[in-house]
Image 1: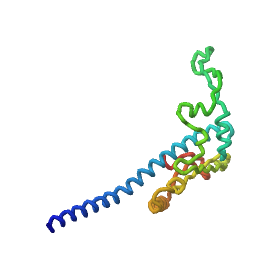
Image 2 (image 1 turned 60 degrees about the vertical axis):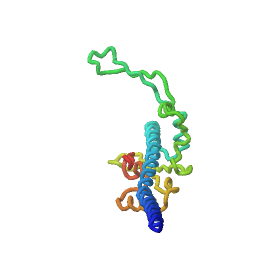
Image 3 (image 1 turned 30 degrees about the vertical axis):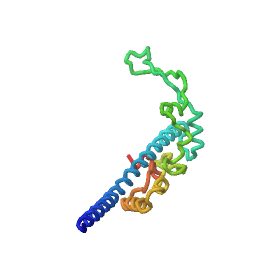
Image 4 (image 1 turned 120 degrees about the vertical axis):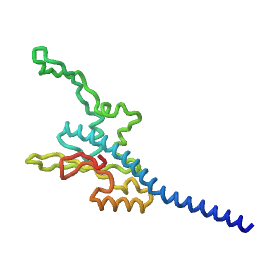
Length: 199
């Protein structure tokens, strides 16, 4: 009788210990998976912003740090639709004639094929409880030419605030130890680059 109770007790203890061991192994795995999922969502949103900012720069010779300005540009701006045909007077077939056949709205051109895309959400950081991206712009001297620059920084605490605080702190310290920005970053205010640290 005592032997049976002891076996049952040991079985329960083994099951409980196995569960805690499994949970302790899976906790960092789940954290890493969640961070990767959120990083991907933010990187995709920043890619949309980068595309819009690059188009804005083509029209205005500089980036904008105002989402109101950027969204207004996307909603009201138009891109010419150009038809390119070979020049009939050119026997070498190297010259072309460009003919503007119409215009298309910039927002429709960029996001028209994406169902449920809300242009107003362009400024909102995913998984941040409504926090907005902070965009900084400026100009730098690059070989005697003033070049427009842009930077977007999204620290971990903006979008991992609801995860385990110690795990977020450990991740932040690890990134700082590697001299990397602890979060998602695009562009630079000191270099003419719009690369993201996820690329």
